[in-house]
Image: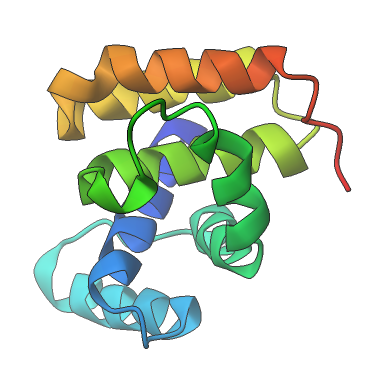
Length: 139
């Protein structure tokens, strides 16, 4: 599976968790994998599963990273797809040093074009502000 497809699968897992907050990411992964066996659905690979889990293991840090740039918005008012994309990209930007920040932003915009097209410029702007903030060194 390509890294782009893995990111898309991580997005799906993060998005699904927003509807099932009491389920662990690992449980969602298993449910999706079981469903995939029966329905020719692309099952998440290890990178997608780990990335989605890492988002929720570090949700406060990740949300804090971009929330301050949501001028006149609160994260709870964002569409779930937009929030999932922001969380995915912010996690990569903050914790995956081997992935260039520009790649994380570009991939987020590409996901947004498919799943939240009206918000693609908004996502690009928020993540661009995060990139310029100097707050990306891992803690």
